Length: 123
Image 1 (cartoon, rainbow, N blue to C red):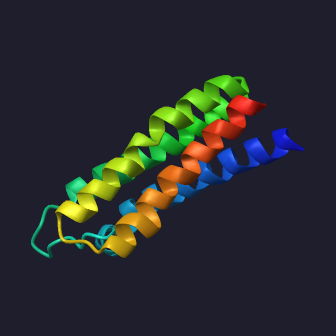
Image 2 (cartoon, helix red, strand yellow; image 1 turned 180 degrees about the horizontal axis):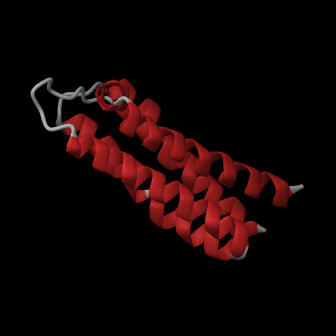
């Protein structure tokens, strides 16, 4: 029962971050608003698209590890990649975003990723 739960959560997280990355490519300003720090209208959208590519890369790498590596390797990946939403929490707080978004979205995501890592290590 633990193995399907561990892998299932990891797959959902991988697909979710690919979706978020794609949103930053298709609708960068709307995605930035959802991130918690709206982009300036006269700002360079290239930086938003860079975030999109980063997120897609994280998701594809995670899904690739799920497909071709053991649970321990995926667990270590999840442990390392939890730094991104933790950093996002700080970025949102430092740039005028709300605590609700910082903690309710980004910090909660980091905790979920860490739970995923723990489940994968337990498999």
